[in-house]
Structures are given as structure tokens and as C-alpha cells.
Length: 351
Image (cartoon, rainbow, N blue to C red):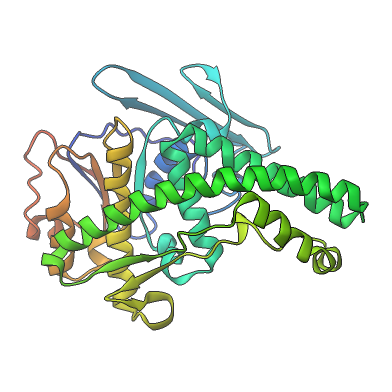
């Protein structure tokens, strides 16, 4: 209700392939955005959910029902113009972070291209969000590390004493070591999923690899690093070493995508990374995630988009946006199948 240009929209998706089609501006991507918010507590279009409130409305409300064999969960997300936010899971108040562990979705959208093209921070955020969706322990660890880091940075800004900083160094090193151990564990698992997906996609003609540093300093060595960086950090008033500075990258056929990848290679790499994310979530949780594919056929040529569809399991709920049904029929998607559905959206008429 009152979400973007959707004054009031209700959709009931099938368990198979769901097509949302219509001209640009009809609100197709907004439907995926709403599902994504219910699954992660955040929008992939904006960092401010205030921007999702329909023009002229005081608030937006999204309600979703997520069904498994054993249960149905009702997730509600409300955002008011006065910045008040209400989230509930089965009528119990919740926080945005609580949604991460409830209903897994994997999004393939142009906005996600920063995973291959963006800064190291974009890749760290990708992995932190992904690992937090499959592990409550990881989620709590990253929250604890971030909280300790902020407190140490605040001390650097207020020119704390050497004794105070040493106390926070010990606290930060403990949190950092815990985070590094868990990151290494999940990064190795994700790398295996990436290898499996690369080998399967298009007969393995493209190999997407993860560039990572498997080694991290011990707690003792990290304390030494903090001590060495003390003078510099007092000057810049922020912590310059630690897991929040880890650098990860991706390669395509053994060359760095960020440096040498063409536009087409970035697109293909993102598809393989996201399908690897799907496989990772499926292996690490009891759920099969829902796939959200935004404008898939416009972004990839026929052969490559066909290869994506070939990798989808028949029992995977998939929601695809597209401008028409022609591409859908060309790819052999049977909309007469009772598991599949199509939804036609029209651009709203504004007075």
C-alpha cells in the first residue's frame, strides 16, 4: 500500500516461474524491491526507505506471507514520513536485522553490479549480508565488531589516553579474530559454490574465481598492528586496520574483473556470482531461496539468459520482470503450467 507508484497492489505468486511484465514505469521492479525489503529489511534501490512512500501519502506498508511446507509467516514492514518504522513477524515486533534470517531471497539486479565493479567495501558488504542470512552467529559477530569499532573510533576522535586505547585494542582484537575465523569458513564454502556454478554454466567456458586472502593476523599480531598504526590513527581519527578493511575480488578466466573485465564479462560474472549465492544459501539453510531476476532478458543475450534458466531448479520459486511476454515464450517458459504465473502491470495514470 502506497509503495512507490503502487497505491494498492496484491499479488499471489506461484511456486514456479512468475513473470511480472509491463512497460517501463509500471512498477515491476518495485514489486521485487518490496519482497527484498521483507526479506532483508533494506531496499536495493535506496538507503532511505522514506523514499519508497508514494507521493502524497503519509506512510507505506508492505505485508507478505512466506509459506513453507510446515508453516506460513506473516511479515509486515511499515515506514512513515515522520521516520517511524514498524516491523513485525507473525504480529511480534521485530527489527530489520531479524528479517535476514527469516526468508531467503537472491536478487539479480543492475544495482548489484557494484559487487564486481565497485569498491572493496561493496564486496565486503555483499559477503557480510550473505553470511548473515545463513548464520545468526555471524550476524551477531559482525554487529559486535562494528559496535566495538565505532566506540574505538569515537575514542580516537576525542583524543583518548593511551591506557583507554589499549583497553579497546584488546576488545577489538578479540572481536576481529572471531570475525576473521567465521569469514574464512564461509568464504571457502562460497568459493566452492562459485567453482561448481562456473563449471555448470555454459559448459564451463568461463571460470569465475574468488580472490581472497586466507590468512589473517593472530590476536597478538593484530594488537601489534594497532600499536604500530597508533600515531597515524590519532591523526586521521579512525581505525585503519582490521576486518573492516579486508579486500576481496573476483576473477574471470584468471584475470581481475575489476581491472580487466569488459561490460559483458561484468554482466556474466554477476550472474554466476548470484547463482552461486543461490547455491550457497540452499546448502547452508533448510530453505530454497526465492530468485528475484530484474529485467533478465534485457541484460543478457538469448543464449546466456537461456543458460541461466537451465540452471534454475524446477522447484525454485522465481520472479522475473520483463517488458513483454515475447521473450518469455521464446525461452520456452510455459505459462499454462499451474506452477507458473504472469502479472501484467500498467503505468499508473497521474491526474
